[in-house]
Length: 250
Image (cartoon, rainbow, N blue to C red; front, side):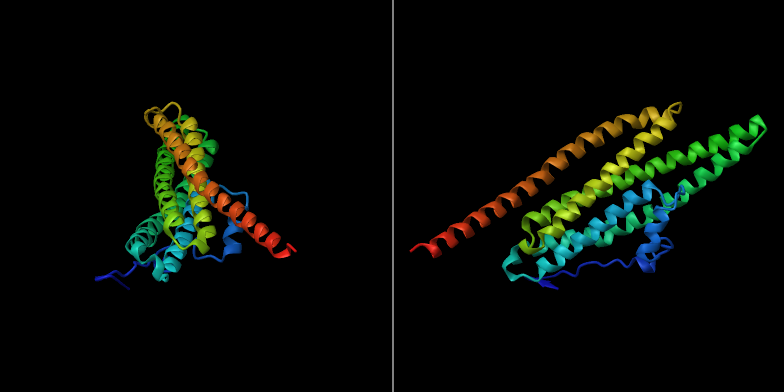
């Protein structure tokens, strides 16, 4: 793709070329996994999946916007955003989707072994191992949040400067990104409550408060996008009504 004098080729990422056993499943089967009442797939993978959906929607908006010559001055920005979404964030979230499923599955397995153990030392060992891995799972959530925050920002950019006809996709991308962040904050807080007697929890709880404040700001920016589009819709309807009234005047 040539943009001005630059040769800018959007990066692509094919999730089927990586070790993605879960994401390779048909959509209905994957959703059934979430509704099977098991520990995994769980909320961490769900948060990552929301981010993956946001990525794909942003890529669609950029692809369609790059086809529009009237948006040529923004093409470099669209290529950059698409490269970030497809070549950086998508593969990272794919990795986190699979990793969180594996990690939390192991946490549950260790908890079961802990509960079945009759020896106090053995029980303590399994409990410690489970909590060590729960810390890892919590860090997965923080990383998912970070990636989804980036997607919210990218979504707002393409909503503002992308092709007007696909702003529904931009809005959905923003919403999915925010949902991924919100879910991640829920998960992190819950895990830290379970890890309350650990230094890790004391160190990370302030991070949750910071993330919540950042989320509030991002949501405000997202609502501004909704408000602006709502104003456009109201103006368009009012103009159409005025035009129709002019046409029926004697």
